[in-house]
Image (cartoon, rainbow, N blue to C red; front, side, top):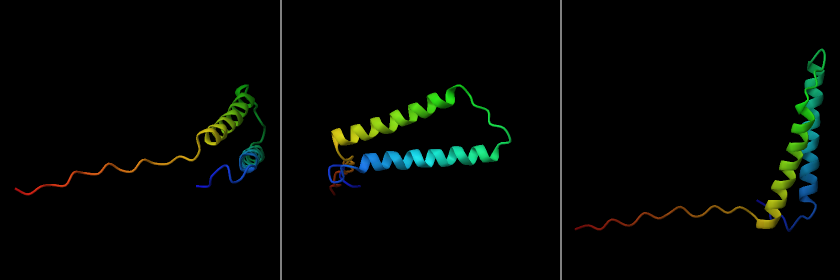
Length: 80
């Protein structure tokens, strides 16, 4: 995984990419439906999703890349 310090615009580009994918999905869903029903929570969920993406990117910049801890080693068996 890339270091976020290497690409300052990575988070902006990734957010735009995610927004584009969501918009494409919304357009596809609209094309499939005969009439569009807008539920009250759709704009709220869209805003929440944008907030989650932005928060995740901010945390990754703050704490850096996630590195898995190495698996614990099993002690060697001693023969008697």
